[in-house]
Length: 291
Image (cartoon, rainbow, N blue to C red; front, side):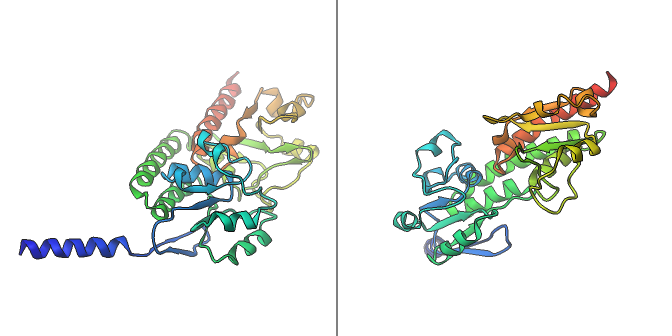
């Protein structure tokens, strides 16, 4: 009987080893692999970070420009940027999985990728909770479930702690400045607005239909935000744009904040870390009310 049980266990293990892997991507579409992916191309910086977090950094054979975290990502061959990729090089790398990201100019590029017949997984976290979910599903596709599940749980716990700590705080109306020439922001459909929500913040342009709308100074002044956030980038004025507007509430209360765009503008694991920084800044804004 024991011998029979052993034979059945071995047969089951062999069957499992060859079982197809199917997960749903962020479009809700099934992505099926006959075996765990061994050669993966990451089509966005946040995707690269997610794959590393899922335990699959050594399986990435190609990335795009600005895929610079973690440090090991800088050594992976570059196959292009968010505007154009080298299709011949992608084919030559013989990937068995491509993790894509949809943006304004990517439709034609992704249609071409589909013609290669390689499975595509669309990664597009809309909420902070989607980030650990992405890690877990990528772990399934990579065959690194144990690592991915542990990491995903850690980030879920950190997010839950932030939500419990800050979500009931008094609301703070925020203008989030992505760039100043032109002046544009992010609407409620962008994951940054979910980070604000976790911290008890309210996006003053959350109701706009365009994900990254261009606004003007007059429009921001009319909304009179209590806090302004801008990212730290080279050749960029950032929050200094608002200092001359002394009657603006954010200026009067000294709530002009600069944050690391790599932590908040990329929907990878570090965005939850960036959300913690955002929450701390908003807590300062609340303290400034008392002063």
